[in-house]
Structure formats: C-alpha cells, structure tokens
Image 1 (cartoon, rainbow, N blue to C red):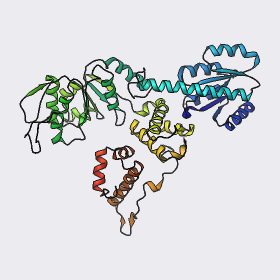
Image 2: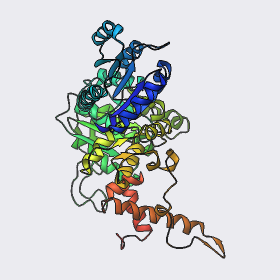
Image 3: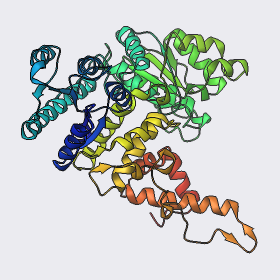
Length: 464
C-alpha cells in the first residue's frame, strides 16, 4: 500500500545517514532520517512507517530497543538492521526477535534496495490483513469500526460483552463519532443479525409525524391516512429499532415510548388493537440527557429504561493514535468508490491531520478525505492539499467567492452575503458529486434533507 511506503532511517553516523537517504530518495522512496534512537522513537510516536532501517549499535536507545518497540506497537512495520561483521551473531538473535532481515557494513546498496522492496511488500500485506480483520470480526473491529487506541479498546471490550445480549443500549457521543455504525455492528454481530434493523432519526422528522412513523396508524386516523400503515417498531419485530437523536423526542411521545418499552407492545395511532413485539431498542444522542432531565425536557424514567447499558464513543481528538488508521481506511474506501489508484499521504500531511482537533469527528474526516481526493490530480496528498484550517495551503477562494459583489456603496448586505456564499458552496458540491444530492450533502457535512431545503430556498433548482 502506497500510504505505508515510507522509510525511517536511523544512523548516528551523519555521512552514512546522508548517503543512504540520498540513494533511497533517488530510488523513489520517501525517507525520513533520525540521528539517534531517542529521536527515532519520538518520530515513530507521531508517524507510522512501513520500513525502519536502523543501525544495530546506537548510543542510548539501541537498534534492538527500537526493534522491540516496533514489534510491540507497530505490527505492520518491518525492521532492517545494519550491523558490523563483529555483531553478526547479535543480528541473528535480532531475527529471532522479529527483525525482517539484516545487512552488514559496508552496506551494499543494491542488496539493501532488494531488502527494502521485500520489506515493503511484507508490511503492506500485514497492514492489509489487519485492515481486513478489522472489517470483519477482529478484536479491534465490529463491522466497519476502526481503531486500536486505548479509548476504542474499551469500547470494543464492552461490545464484546453485550453483542449477544438483548439489553437496551444507549450510545453517547458527539456528532460524527459513528453512533449508528456501532448500533448496526451490535445488531449484525448479534443473535438478531438475520432479523430487521430499522433506524429512525427522531430529530429529522416533524413532531406531528414522528408518532405515526414510530408506532404506525390506521386508516382515517388523520388527514392523509388513506390506509393502515405499520410503524418502525412493527417493521422491526424480531430485530432491532435504532432511535437516533433520542434527546429531541417530544415529551408526549417519550411517555408512549416508555410504555412500549415496558409492555413490549404497540398501539397504532387512531387504533385500539395492541400488537405484541419482540424488539431490541438501541438509542443514541449527542446531548447530555442528565442536563435535559434537570431542565425538564427529558423524562427521567425513560432515561433509566434506555440507559441499561451505556456506550460512550470518544471523539477523534481523544484517540489521535487512530487517525492514521482512519485516514487509510477512508483513502481505500473513497479511492475504490472513485475507481482511482490508492493514494498515499505525505508525512507532513499526516502530521497535520493528527494535530487537527476534528470538531466534526470521523464524519468530518471522511468528508475531507473525499473532498481532497476528488480535487487532487496527484497520487499523493500533500499538506498544501488539505483545507487551510487543518494546515494546508490557502483556501481556494474560487470555492467560496460568489459571482456578484458582496459590498456595495450602501455597505455590506449580510443576509445576501451569506446566501451567496451558501449558494456557491452548494453549486460546487453538486458539481463535484455529479448531481448526486446524497454525496453532495456528505461533502457539505449536512443531511440530504437539509440540502434539498437549501436548494429550494436559494432557488437553485433550475441550476441543478
């Protein structure tokens, strides 16, 4: 994988270090260099490398120390040791510790290049296997959940314990942390996997329609109810109902939901017949429900009914060590969808991505990776390709500059300015997405329904 085809060279001899760096660069490899073991470990803590080439004998932290750290913390990395003839026995012992290979001084560059090529192949294969295991049922993944940080390991540990139960689950976390993804993973890895998974966003449906969507209605229950209609709970019988943004549910529906959870039966709007259910309920929210209870906006009894098993998803800024893995995942996913060769990320760009706070979390990262790939003509993402607030180059003004002047002799037309910028961003997103509203909405980090409403409000339907 090209995104792992980076080399870290460690040698305390400046002449050897500079010579090997130059030769490897000329051979087409991206090389970072370190003059000591301590410096190398500091670099590795921030940036993963496919291949580490290190002198065996170093002052302070030795090549063996580096090897042990790499094998413990970076399982997809390969280590090549450089040793003198007198240290050959030590190098052989290092092979038993997991080194890929070793080469003796004076270094034959042709032999080293062969070793680097093979080491890259091995690292990419190991990384691909790790990735595939994460896509299936590996220890660090349920379905498509990506992460190996301590914070995510705690999440996976809890998921391991509850996936085969029928307990009601409340998933907590900021917007964009992947709450629905976790809910789907719980369902499709559990005993109900062959039954329906029915999701409903309580915040995206008007309050007067939400009751019918959840519980169904009978013919004539209200204007427009021309026939009987089952609700989400009935459709999910035997499976799972996922109630997203549960904190936005109106209070009169909270009471009815509580009754459904207690009695495991549902009554359609306008009807009198009760239908027994066998449904697991998973709910999610980015709100602090305890505060909502104190403010009188959420029922305390419903909260305790929903919060049997809580799962709190950490924001990306609290699991920065997962960022390279997430970036790699979205690169593979997006390049595959766009039928493009797999792109790589420069060390500088990766550092910028790792240092960014990601207020929109995983969803924001996915959108930015997709946008960067869509606008790139290269096979490698550089720091300058990233949005300005992540540390890239200056923002492309053409993307946000409206065609009409925003400041006139009368001053600034603030509403008009906002509408013009919004219209330009939507037009650009629709163009990049080839008119597909769902993809354009993802690029803009908004819901598809919100995008449709904005298109109507800004009178962009004709342009579309």
